[in-house]
Image (cartoon, rainbow, N blue to C red; front, top):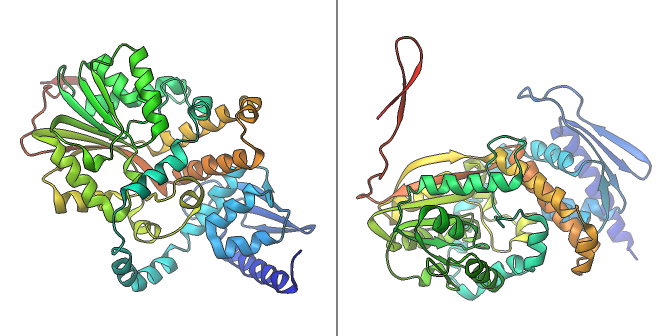
Length: 429
C-alpha cells in the first residue's frame, strides 16, 4: 500500500522525466501511462544522419518513475525485472534511451570534472580484497554450468565472437575469435602460455590442440574450474593444460605468452596497475600479451567507473569497464609493455548478444527445469538487450590488443600487400 508521500514522489518524478524526454529524446518513443500516450521525437534521421528508431514503453506501475529518476539504468532494469513496464522492442527502447543519454554527456561531464578529483581521492583508499573479488566473480559465474551451456555455443566462449560473415553460425564465429587471438599472440609449438581467466576452457583447448602450446590457465570460479578440468581431460589434453584455482596476483613463474579474454572488466579501476604489473611479471623479456577487453568511451570512463548502473547492480558486482586510454596509462605507469596491435569488434559483440538471447529463449522449459523463474529470465533479457544496445550505439566496444615486452620479435615474416603498376595486389615479404 502506497502513501500519499510516495504518490507525490511518483508524480514529481514523472513530471521531471517526461520533461527530460521532451528535451533529449530525438527518436520516436511512445510512453503509454494511465491510458495516455506521450510521444517523443520523430521519424526523421537524427543529428548524425542515422535513421530514427521506434519503440513503445507501457507503464504498469507508477513507481517506475521514481525508480528511474533515483536509480538510473539500475532503477529502470529493476522495474523491468518486476514487470512494472513492458515494451514491444526492448533493444530498440534501450538504444533510444542510450542516444538520449548521450545528449546529456556535456552536462554530466561538467559535474564530474568538478567533483571527480575529490571523490576519486576518497575512493582510492579502498583496499584490495581477494575474498571480495572471489565473491563477486562467483555471484555471476557460479550460476551453474547447465545454465551457461543452455545459451552458449559448443565452444562455451562467453565473450565476443568474430563473424567472418554475418550469417555464420555462432560456433564458427567463436572459433574465428579464438584463432585471431592465437594469431595475435604469434603462437609457436612448444611455447608456454599463461591465461588469466579460464572461462570454460575454450581458449586453452583451442590453443593447445591447434597450436601445440602448453597452457596454464587460472580462474577463481569453482564451477568453471571443475568444468574446465573435466573438459580438458575428455579432450585428452591434460598433459598440455594445467587448470588452477588461483587469483592472478598469486601466480608465479614466467611464460612466453599471456592471454586474458574479457577478464579485466572484473578488475576494479583502482587495481588496473596491479593487474598489468602482474601480467608483466609473468612474461619473459621477449614475451607477448593478448588482451580482449570491453572498453568504454574515454569521455564516459571517469563518470562510469564510480556509477552504479544496471550491470554493476544485478550482473557483475564490482565490475568496471576500462577505456583504451585507461589501459595505456596503466601499462605506461607500471610496465615496459608496448601496444603493438589493436582490432575492434564492437558490432560483432552486438550480434553475439542477439544470438545468445535467441538461444536463451529456444527452450524455456529447460530454464524452468533449472529452477530459474520469470524474474531471473527478465533480468537476463534486460542484461543482454542493454549490452546489445550499448554495442550497437558504440558507447562501448570490444577490442583485441597485443602488448609486447621490449625483447619480443615476431616469429612469422610479415606479409605486406602492395600494388604493382597495373593496379594488381601483390604480396611482399
